[in-house]
Image 1 (cartoon, rainbow, N blue to C red):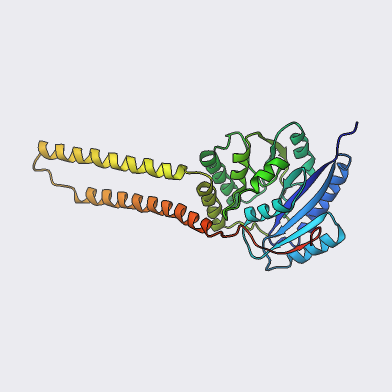
Image 2: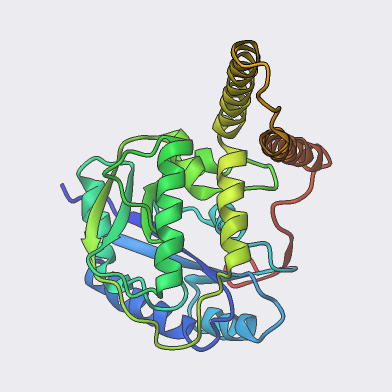
Length: 315
């Protein structure tokens, strides 16, 4: 008996990619033709920047191929919200996510699919030599440390934007309805049966990365406030440390005064301690306020994304 055909859903968040997305889709098509004996496929393109002509290009692609679907968001909601939008419209047995700029090699998708067939739930691409800028590499390193500490990511697991996941993982992820989605956190809380596979990483041919320093900070902050209470525990530990240090310093000051009544009381050290403790208090209050603010926004049913228009399969 032959092996049953599986369907692969490619979900690609698009941001100012009018000049590159056509090439990415063509590469997917060529790659899946080589795997046509085992897999059928669909491509879901989510436009997260409706101010340019990217969606017009997506419309043209969808008109030429009924396996392509385009989703135009009402405004820029961010990469992770765009992925969640694509997840809710895909129906494949396997979902593959990759970038819109051609840096993630669609022609190596077979490596991810083969690894899933070994029994893993999620497979992330690991790059032999990353071709990102130093800024993006720094951002990736910080993200690596944050996910390991806050989300319990295994130390030897490399996280990237190019990954494949089985259907049950995606179905579990889309149950998350709050307005601060973080795909890595959703994957890690669903399964730990995850591995890596080596792929190449290409240089960017056109344009620049859509991630700014502000967006990267926002992504990191979203990750550790949406899926972890460890920052609050760190705040508690810092508060305990400061209280203990202040108590011990107070005892030291009293003993010092008893042993040498002529020693002057230190104005500078007192002010330094006050500024330090005051700063720590403000920092921790701000962190708690961030958690409370996110709870408030979520209770008001702020949307993950808003779909303006759909073209293709259901358009």
